[in-house]
Image (cartoon, rainbow, N blue to C red):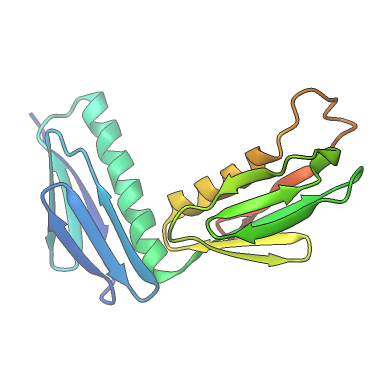
Length: 180
């Protein structure tokens, strides 16, 4: 059978350390680590390159190989430049109060509710609140994206017409790319 290989270039300012299935990547903007399920695959670091290979050429092995390669590229890119997510606070019916409390974002008076809504901020994500814009910064794309999703889903409305009640916190910029 033919062997499939994926080669990922590692910049000189990035350090990669592999211990079994744990991969640690350090760079100028932080550190990312992740445990990969490398079933039937081999991951090596040599000459500023990560070499990911598999002996089998089935569709599933190729799919898993490409997914792991994409995760590794995101980890390397994250330690070189910070991922930035921006969310906008939109309130048309009731004035919303948004505050940061330790590892949570607290939304008070959402649609006139008495009980505040809360969204978890994952560790390693820096949150800034500027008037009606929430900015999330992290070297880990998945943590920044999950925190943004937590905030957005905390102001989800289920029992009202979405065309009329457009209040909430909405993502406007995702990893540096503006959403339309």
